Length: 356
Image 1 (cartoon, rainbow, N blue to C red):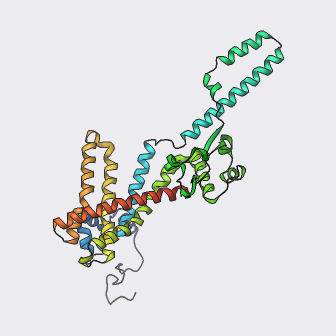
Image 2 (cartoon, rainbow, N blue to C red; image 1 turned 180 degrees about the vertical axis):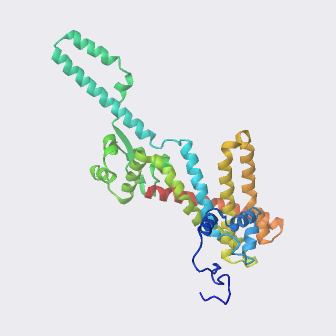
């Protein structure tokens, strides 16, 4: 970029006018400056975000460069929260989603061991040709844990139909609303097949027909074999669920404030800012909860109230309406948000189940 005469800095990119040669001291100075110099926008953004609605108001006053981009802030804060939730869930040893399969597999292995032991007893008794030896081996086998004798589970029942009585009534996969599934739709799958065969091989071996039924059975097998990973897969997709929710919430706000002539984008950025604050607040609490001790419950209660009323105060500041109208619209938007959230969760779980 052409520089004006005697210019010390470039008017286009603000780089210092330099001949390109610098000392080792200047090199180290630039290195430490790039490593440890925190962008002032971080502090400005967080400071404005802490006051309900202020960041959105400032942003639409034309102060864009001073603050982080709303979507970038939303994605970073959401990713931070999901990462912390994953760590917390991992450290707290979540319920084993494969527990049923593991128990069945263990019982099957115990049953096989008992059969092998019984076969060894018979062959040994036949070799020794002694009634006393046979009686001794029978006594030894009888003294084993009775669970080895009763452990005859060598199969696992899976639902093999996506329909319930009528093909018009669609039924959700076993992992969710299994209460609606008919027991007659179950089929027993050998534990050894589930453990050692691929999903597609099992579908072919058991002659599972129908597009949706094949998906149902395949995902049940995956959940049985590696269901522990499903919760983390679900969390990983949560940020995209929230990102999809934002335009719907912005539409609700647009309808509530249709007389205020706000652009749709303004409502969308307001939603980004509110959720960014909530994500960061919950993240801070998650980081501090292990050190709070006896104060964890009151801090959790305070976090709940702040999370509940921060959006209302933000609406009051940004949309500039009286308290009565703001409270009423906050109540309507909260109900709408709850409905959107429930639909989004259902969509997330179903999509995660299909693509897991």
